[in-house]
Image (cartoon, rainbow, N blue to C red):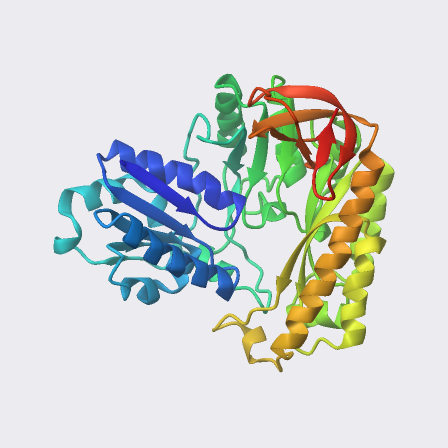
Length: 417
């Protein structure tokens, strides 16, 4: 073993893990495991600690370096673990000199915790890579951090304020990835619809997407990660309507379907805004498929309020649901609000997941008989333009885009003919 990375959480973490692995390898590391953590829920942090203990048991000679959002907001928690050699902050982890310094001086002669004030970081640099090992699609960071302060969210304290990568650097990265064989690129960030506010001229996300598609005509498929629909700009809607290379799948940061809960979350949209956005996009792009994040059991949520979150699954034509049982994060306003009983939270999360499963089943049924272009990932599995998984019953070539007829489904995945 030379350098191994264990990644939790979002697509941005996947991109950053690849960058860290290359920095560590270039610095000459061996026998090291980097754990890139997530802090979106208390459960994510618990899983990271559990994973660290397991790694220490299975690889007793390995040096364990912990980084990511959980390490940024709770460095002392990980520093107190005897299995951990070093705790590195979210800004520091992306700098090559951090890894060179750790190699040269070792833990014995330096501080165990290398975590600085993330709020002091004012820019996000592009870290050029030519592809992601083990992935058929490439992820490109266009933005980091968040200027909003939703009452349930700890992530701004792990990522800092919003910073954008200049358009030219993003285009160059996409071009490099395509030249090295990437068929599909995913734009990632923490709050990517806030893209450009800190750049000269304040370009919007739609401007960036148009620029990528115009300047990299060889790019076959472009995806956008989770967006805040209230910030979708006119150029983005224009691309959705008219550019077939932008894939027909959007993941929305909805969080709830009740207006009072949305206000208590300090979200910037109301229920009607989400419904109107989805209806508008469906008019522009009838084949568009939506995914969404929804929190079950937010503080003060009544059964009537929760029912509106259930209803919005159909009203927004949601297909892929990410359900989060509310998890109070210390230091956030929501943690100080009147909490919903844990058994009620778990039951509401279960009901939301069942609603999501029914919505997915409806989508799978509608796909039978359709002709779809599928990007092959691994283990005889690929994904359609709408990001729906497709299972093959014979060996297929990883990284290829195949046109197939959908013969059926198994309740979770489509089956290729």
